[in-house]
Image 1 (cartoon, rainbow, N blue to C red):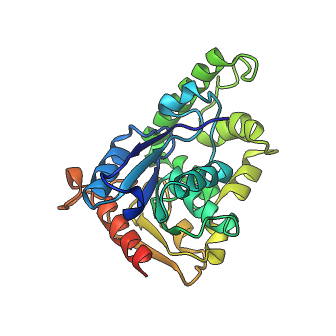
Image 2: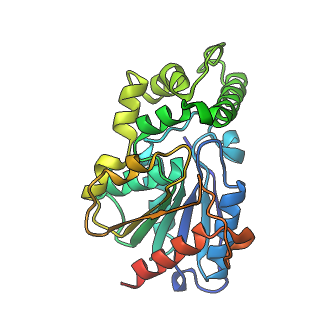
Image 3: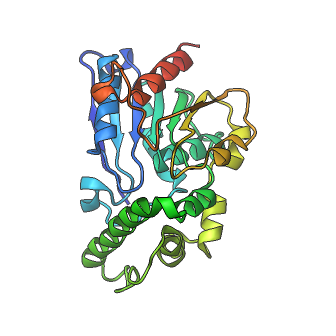
Length: 279
């Protein structure tokens, strides 16, 4: 299994600058607008930028036409170790599903992380996957549910065409909700008995109290897919900071900012990571 990473290195000696690994969300890739925006902002601040494609995402599909999920911390750990071999200081910036993965890795793999990893910033992390799946089924969220279901179904069909030996025909048919998709597709392909088990074992929330490196959890009170209570109910370890903006939606956070397109989440995240690496 191989992952595609896209690196943009600062000029000069690599060891002179830190690197940030940026991880996309569900249905995204290294080419997603929010990933590119964050990368441009980080590069302008003097960081090396490494954009990670989760397995089977973006152009990485040619290397690994498999399914990713929220609990594949081994993939992010391998990426962190690879980047740590090139630069002595690094951090991770995750969005949505990638934000949950970043926090999960920081907690569950804390004894395996390289010493140069100085911190993680998690933007709109679904740290309670079951609660977020329930939120998608709320009457007002039908537009999001339909968007994700079209994207997930098409993604499954693409993988089916590439690997008919792994992906049975028709598994994606007749599914109406993300929970149903996770029950029929994500869970069995990820080695879980059910969607409930997948959510329980892959949610970062229970691991927040065990994290021993600086971490920022940045969420919005008006996020339609992540109930604010599902973010605030978890106890935190001392190095973890939780910030709940009154507005921002899901990976929105648009207002006057030095970051491209006034998308201010990367500005806040990079400020936090710079502080973390300097401490």
